[in-house]
Length: 309
Image: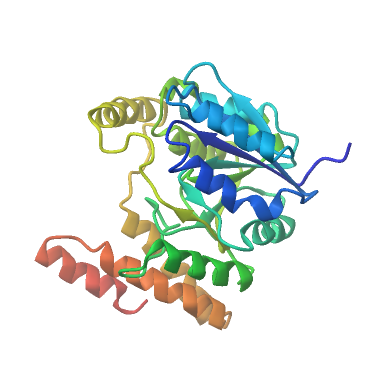
């Protein structure tokens, strides 16, 4: 049997009607795509979401349904899902994401153009903690879906190096995933396992890039962000990350975006520019302004740093 180009592993946990269903519904245009394999994992939900996930898959039999009898955490749930995947690349998908029109068509195009030394691709989005974040003031989810549609349809054919990737949605070469033995389940229910994987990938000698040509809407905070449990996990897992990677750099989102804007400037200086890049630059400029420091003095220094970009 021919391997699909891309296997999506959608990880859901509770709140099916609010999160997982919207994500899966947005994937319907690709259910019959022979290059695409879709697997959905319910991570031990106890609120009826597992049954609703199973019912959705019965109605859409091309989607493989995996129901865990316990909450394996983000790392464990993704590892379990990927163990059933056949694709040359895998796409880890948080259930709090929505795919605009042409998203997976754009992803397939990017994957086919990606150099062999690049093992991981992070799409752009409206909500991320690094240089993958674009921004437009007061934009609604509908606005972002339209922006995403345009971005997916109007490629730049550029990849930009990134220190680490956010795993709201991430594409990884399957063989490299196996080489690195997937995500580290020591991080429990979640937080920092994506940072750890990014650093392990880098130390193994592989490149990770932002693709400017794939946009995915990220609703964010669908599981337990902001809760007491989440704050405790963040604290514990940050210590674990630093134990594994004492040299890890914790950069503010604006520094990731600044790095991308510097890459844009080099493209302009080298005469490599286009209207497609200009559109993205405007969204990144918005993000740089939105993410500026709070103190007046630091904002002044920040504005000087970004003035020429």
